[in-house]
Amino acid sequence: MADVKRTWIKDAFWETPTKELLNCISEHKEGFKDVRQVHKLKRGDPLFDECVEALTEKHINVNTDRRVDKKFKEQEQKRQLELNRRKAQKLEQLFNYKLETFEVEDIKESRNRILKSKLRRSKSIPEVNLYAMMILQDKLENETE
Amino acid sequence: MKPSKGYLVVASKRPNFYSFAINCIESIKDYYPDAKCCLVTEERFLDGREDIADDLIFCDDHYRAKLWGMANSPYDITMYIDADAEIEHEDIAIVFDELNGNDLMFHKLDKKYKKVYATLDFTYENAKEYYTYCGGVCLYDMRNPLIKDFMNDWNDLFRKQYSKELILPMNPWQDLWNFDQTTLWYLLNKVDKYKDIKVDSFKDNLRWNYFPHYERFFNDFPKDPIVIRHYSSYAEKDKSYA
Image 1 (cartoon, rainbow over the protein chains, first blue to last red):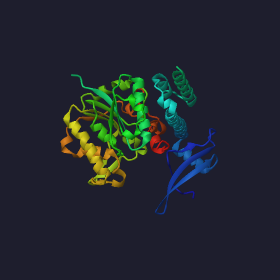
Image 2: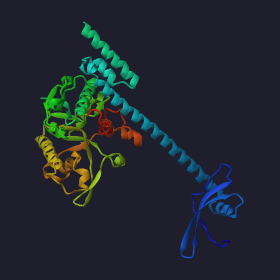
Image 3: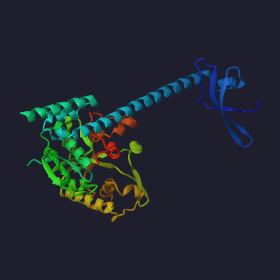
Image 4: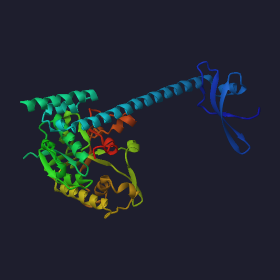
């Protein structure tokens, strides 16, 4: 193994902030075969030193920072999409709920455009309920008159 | 003489679309009380709420009676809006300015959003093609007689396509035959008579037909506030009104 000539792929990075564990990939030839190998090397391992010497510590530092930054952005984007998913789902549920409310006979028959408009613009189910009750009340009052 | 301008909403086939359409028209009037709105629907659905519409036209129970409705708009310049949409900004009043000398305006389908569209790409006579426009909203000027012909042809061709009388050399046909975009694409791209139609998409494209998917999967928003929000995913999934 000692005379194996490895090429170290440039995207090596530190697994830990203490730089004791190095994640890297090497390539070498075995006869006609190209062998690609993923390593997790501890400090003290001769391959650890070989890789750091080939790529330089500075390069691995820069690569690690870039990777952390990329992972952080990906997580942030994932979190944002999850928030959006929930928001969109809630909005669709609200739309559904509003339309069901508009199907209630007394609300359907109400001619109070202002309250119906407020119901439609409601941002939550409790708000929808509130305006639905106001529409019913308004209808009852009109009937009494 | 000033051209007449109005909004057109169509509800056919399923009674829930009548409820959607009423909600859509009421939402237009929430933000633009003087708007002229035309409801195209089936007589059997009427329950008194149709009074909100300034014009009422009866259609048949075809799955895409919207195309017939669009061809029979009582206005010179019409903003067609799918029934399962809701208006949420007062700029709905100035949507007609978006026409900007064109004959037809649509919401553009962007390749970026391919994964959320039912279908986008296909082959026509073995050449790769893409749908360009979504028929969910359409602003059009029927003072140009060619546009009236176009709307009538869109309706006629779609009915033939839907009844399997017309089979275009497009693949995969089993995914395309029930979309009005198919006939729209064909008329705009393959029919000589319509090659000079001035057709374009809305400048702030997402603003005028915002699908929840744009936020849900891409975190994308229009530059200015959303005017028309489309709830079609909900409408397709939820059959509780039917």
